[in-house]
Length: 414
Image (cartoon, rainbow, N blue to C red):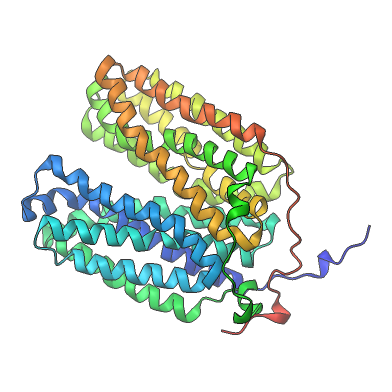
């Protein structure tokens, strides 16, 4: 059967849009990850006890979850370009402000503000990708986009300790703040909205989110992501301490294990995205296979007894612990509809983040009660295993037509 689909050519400018959205997401990830290596110095400078430093991270994540909820909605309403640009610009401004903090109270306010601005970028970026990439090509785009979280973690941990030694913790917040502000201005100038911009400002009506609340598939995807992030961020939070305290691994070697775990994600996310676009397996089925592999690898990790075994398992675990995210994100615009892609992505991601919020406490209770390394990791493995159940219940949805994807012959004006 002949169709007009082959005649449709996507605009090359979509790669500029993806690059800018990725760069903005990378910088918000750097801004978020800066707290980890800087926390000790901040506490000493502001007179905050070690036990009180966790409150700074908590206030950040409160703002981050809230901005995920509302950022995607605003991206659907006002446009991804505006939300991405303002998100990174304002989060950079509050990074500068935090670098000038002189008290715990002031620091907590600015940390909350950073999170409140940074989280909006996610929904805006997803909205732009949905506008510029066809459904069958979004896996690769999402894979590239999601490398930002891992890369941000690597950049912050590579740069901040040296800056603290050479100057102070304030220098790191000032540096990343200025870079974020500059990137925000560039995004506001160069980003194009794609289909949302072609439609004209007169059609920018407030999106109706009620259909999302009744969308069974999105709810199931949210539950699956909760379980998946349970495993990923439970490992990130506890693996180092559990290896040293539970098995007796040298702290340096345990740190190398975690570095290998995180580094593999940078390369594996875009690769799985390209793979998902190339193979005939549905993204739902591919996600289920990844989640089962992730759970099995956590169980395997729980059986290791020395540092060498952990080092061998770490690369496989690092891949399995991250590659589900771009595939699941690529499903959101199809399940929700492209007009609500930003709202759906922000809301689903906010629910996913609850998994990373709850799991540290639960795993801490398990290990505290049993002192068992293996039981703690089996509890982690339960998350992605249970996530398979809602994924199995998701009903197939036919992707929306890509006839409105921006084409070279009709690129939107800047």
